Length: 413
Ligand code: EPU
Image (cartoon, helix red, strand yellow):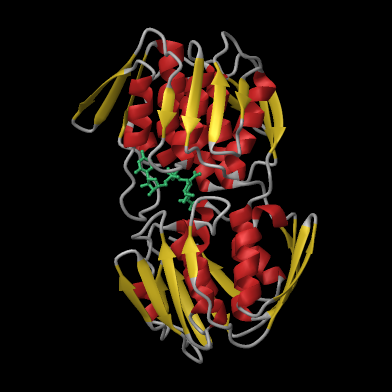
């Protein structure tokens, strides 16, 4: 288990580039299962979650070559529990596998421990498209001779359910309409990838997505968008530790809600089409944050932002409307001297003048682990973070990149 030792209280200086987006890579690599030819996905980040996708595709019979060239030569539609447990997004394969094999099965999906994460929207959508679904013990078995287009109104703009219904609708007979669809940039890029194969999807990025089913698809070649959550994490690290950092590849149009909050917190921002520069010193001004589906403030930056605001010059309230229980990291942050009160759905931070180093343990929650690291960078003295491998799920070479900015981080495997 990797441990980071961090000597905090040092400002960060310099520039770094963001990787391809994890949350675009995962559904797009999985979407190669609907292709009728070779797919090439470029700018794929080297992350343990991406390795889990490659293992899953290989299990299904696909050939995953160097540089993420994928031949969708599928031989099975059964997802074993061990692979489903490594990757929550594996559930979006049910529709594509059902369309190709007439039957598909999986176990309850895994993922970060960030509160309740049901898959009822996914199953209701497949049922509306004509699937028969049995849940026997831990296994979910779906059957359908053909999927047929349907009108699907999502109770919440779920990212995964929007991905899933676009994939299933592409291979269904007739037209599928997704209402209250997620509008995240990763949804738009998945639609672009499918359309490049020959799908007919319109409206991705708006609340209503229209999908005309097609009878066959080809291959596609696509370069992933930059990771807006990784970019945001580096900006928040610089805001917390102070300094002058430029994040190359960061797209301001994907980060507008975060940039607005950083500005209100007293950071000095300079924005160009492909880069964001942040300068910060001293304690942040207090700000309140409410997470929302895109274009709102992303839930994936909620814990990192909370870590930045621990030293605010007043009181801040953070509401997570997407995952109301995503405050599991607060207990560990208390060891640094943070003062945070949790109520159902929100946290109240009473800013403290300074944090002091402590021995910390990252839970299996990627963004919570990022929050610990940010707080440790801002704290005086030495901190250790056990279980730091949680960070490898979503951040490529995080320790090296922060060291290049002047952070004092030692890594022990
Ligand atoms: N929901 C349901 N039923 C469902 C599906 C979702 O009630 O069938 C609820 C969830 O419980 C949650 C809300 O809908 O309250 C939104 O969840 P969503 O389906 O949008 O989440 P997801 O697709 O499982 C993706 C990201 C997450 C990110 C969320 C929200 C990927 C691989 N994962 O998850 O990313 O937090 O969207 O933006 O794209 C991360 O990167 O650390 C991460 C957890």
